[in-house]
Length: 170
Image 1: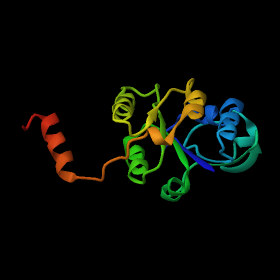
Image 2: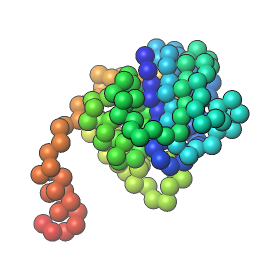
Image 3: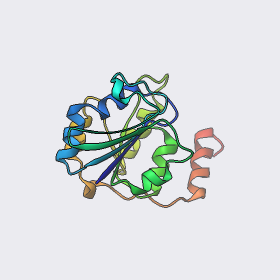
Image 4: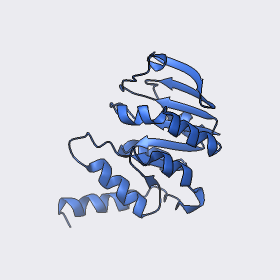
């Protein structure tokens, strides 16, 4: 089973480091995942064995592929049995529209808390699980696909109404 982890185009060293830690890799392995693809963006990895542009390695019973960027992550999301992501709105919507199980980890180093707000709202609706770096292993271990509520298909009228309401037009 495959886990795809993405941090988008930004730098989220803490999520990248946590993902390749013994604790998270062991938790993934014990949960039945044997492959990990990690899109690291501009993140810096302290371990020299991972500090190449592209890297493939086996660690703690998990086959790991790491790379910085590709023109699209659609294929990786489509193949994944689980996606773990930063809480960027574009990535969240893309993954949920594919119907993939999603764990999001908001980046606490960002200037505002929009990632935290979005992750919390979508978790309350049941579409994903939100967690912190510290709680990532326990969230993976307790993750239940059957607990997720399918994300509704896109309806442009609802979005435009929401924007109009937020902007004070109605």
